Length: 155
Image (tube, rainbow, N blue to C red; front, side, top):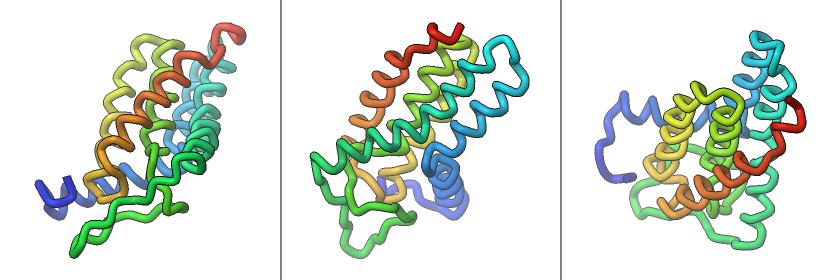
C-alpha cells in the first residue's frame, strides 16, 4: 500500500485521517458531541467517546507483549509519526473500531461511523506506519471491545 496509488490529495487525506485518529481524539469528540445533542443517551455516548483513549491504552499493553517493530521500507519513509516504535496491533484501528462498534450499539444508524473507522484504519499501512495484519488485529480487538463494553448498564 505504501507504493501504490499515491498522489498529493490521497496522501493529504490519509495524513489527515491519521491525525484525527491519534489518541482516539475524533471518537472522544464525537462522543462528546453526541452526548450534548442526545440527552436521553448522554451517558452511553460519553462512555463511547471515552472508550477511544481506553482502547489506546489496552492496545499499548498488547504492543508491549508482542513487540513487533514498525515496517521499514527502503527508500520509502513513513508519511506519519507515532509515539512508539511498536506496530502490532494498530492503535488507530483498535480505537476506531471499538468506538464505532459501541456507537452502533447505542444507535444503529451510527453504523455509518464504521466507514470512518475503516478509512482511519486503512490509512495506516498506506502511510507506511503498519503492516496490514496490524490493522486486521486492531479491527478485531477494537470490535471485540466495542461489543463487550457494558453500555446497557447506563440505559
